[in-house]
Length: 259
Image 1 (cartoon, rainbow, N blue to C red):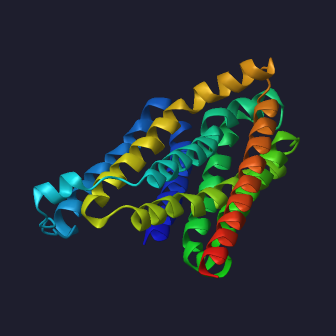
Image 2 (image 1 turned 180 degrees about the horizontal axis):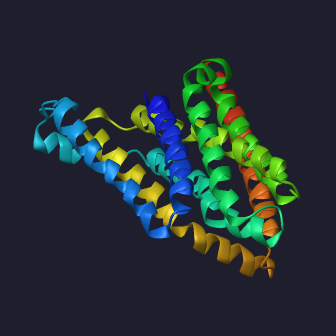
């Protein structure tokens, strides 16, 4: 269900970005008219969203139940990979214009294409989880790193399109995985609190994305977006390798304990 939700969000974003591009040709003020679709969503929510009775739990039991420490690692990881994906909408137009790859308007279509990747990644998450299991996360991180590696050296629109699609494909799988892992580690009676904190971390990290770029540029003493993307490649590669080593050591420890 989380994968389907991510897919719908992705394809919806791609459609409305494309619509916004056409409307922008008529005038930049008219673009904001697209948000009136929220009125339709409000009607659909009121009319069709099922109402579930709240879970009856004693207040003393609920207050004594705490979030596991591992959940905070999941929430931070969910926020960080969302921050990496947010580098596209905040930096792609400037990157394309500065490097003479295309016009600023073409960045909207490229961002929409990345959301097509999100759509496909979300739809495939169930099957990928069954096939790849523990290897899925490092492979998706490697895929995202590959996308940033391509875009950091891109000099043509088609290479940028390939890169943003790879990054979107990775994010489409990683985003629902964060919610799936949260539902696994957080007790059911406080799952709503866990989901709320995860979303808060995701949106905070999206907000901090431009500050992250400024921090990397200051650290590298560079104002090139290519250097920022290259730094992201290194960081994602290190995290992917670290996750593989952690999973392998944990598996060995579990095997030794059982033996």
